Image (tube, rainbow, N blue to C red; front, side):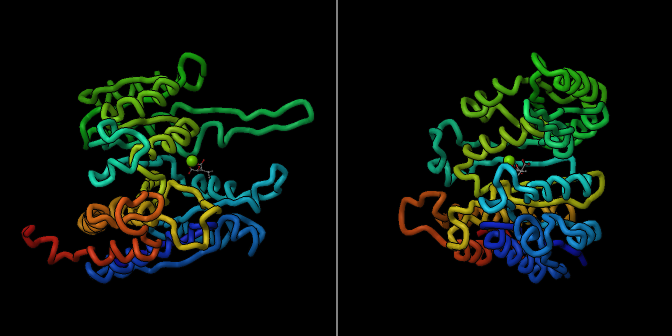
Length: 363
Ligand code: IPM
Ligand code: MG
């Protein structure tokens, strides 16, 4: 198939991990006979420098006419002063909004070879396989902001239809997995959460009666996630709670650097990005973990291009690399030295198999 992918590498380690993601995408095209056109575009702090705008018009236009957007990371100390007039983060929020990418999927799966890489005990994290569905274009990150000499405010708003559509996405995904959905809110305090709980209850009981639905308060969920993470299947929550809890949940897998995400709207187009940030402290050294970016490419193949076998082949290549000890520095290799970003990309590419191998029986 033919597909156009907008590549927004961004700042810090973004370009380093996206280089490996792009190599994997090109390799999939070669092995499976597709024609992917990758277009690199300025974004984030880098685009503030070159165009004076974290999301330049041309970048947005290219994203809107692409089949998918592959994104690295944005931000850095250079643009994070409290009085900074332009912030890379604003470009990211605007991109999500403009593309209507309201559903942020963040899977957390603990690889068997990495149960020792987590700061939590192996018996707690072994077998964890959960999926966060974070609402991405509403709530307090998008509400009115005010600041004056006396104080400041950020308004949190949710409409019924915003809640309905994210709950439907999460419920459909839960139905295709273990059939368990946990909705996270703060209904004992927040009005938006009381609405969230009511709408979730109604949508699931009417449209997805076979699912097991629980409601959990966000503080309890934060605790439960590290006490007993295997209890969860699909979790759905609002924007800010999802932002916070997914960073916490990433530690189950051993490193933030491993985790991919997909941000989807009502059509097939999506934004695919590792959930880690720009990590300015290690940027430019070639030591960042590219697996989160590469697994984001797998999600891109699956959700935007509907290429299931290709997505599975890439995920298998990453899993094989990890199983055989191909670890970057963040994964604290026990034996031997840590791989560089490029070497980790090579470890995946050398294990990536095309369609013929897919059909061959396992030896
Ligand atoms: C994330 C990030 C972003 C967010 C920031 C960079 C705006 O933390 O994708 O989780 O809060 O959504
Ligand atoms: Mg975050």
